[in-house]
Length: 157
Image (cartoon, rainbow, N blue to C red; front, side):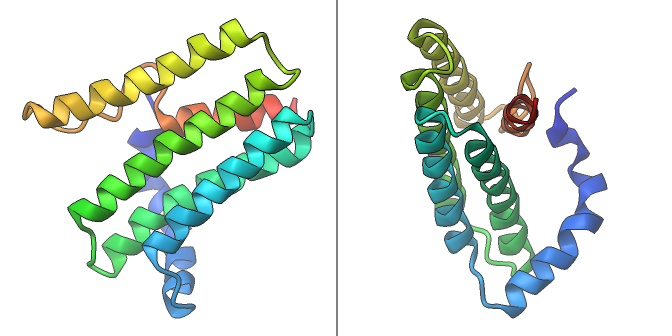
């Protein structure tokens, strides 16, 4: 079971944050961009063996990534364009974080390329399922939320 299946249980925690973001006029797109900047920060930090900073940046990426869709739904402005932007930025974020890990001293590049390929293929298969009419599939062995929690946990350890 992936963490995406717990969205309903997390909603009471996220809703007050979403309400505050709306009051502060923070848009879903700004959260999406902030998630990308946090991912870039994580990749750069991992490249320079700054594991603590990289872990904090992954946590920020996860928070902003969770907020963008929640804010859009709360404001009733969700759109195909926003969904496309979110998924595109998520892939670039995955690339930046994983490349930072294997381009630096944290793991051999062969393992990093294998991990990056797995992440990108899992995402591709989910969008292909949507394209052929099966519906967007967020499950699988490790969904994006699972991967982020795994990376945060590994960074803490």
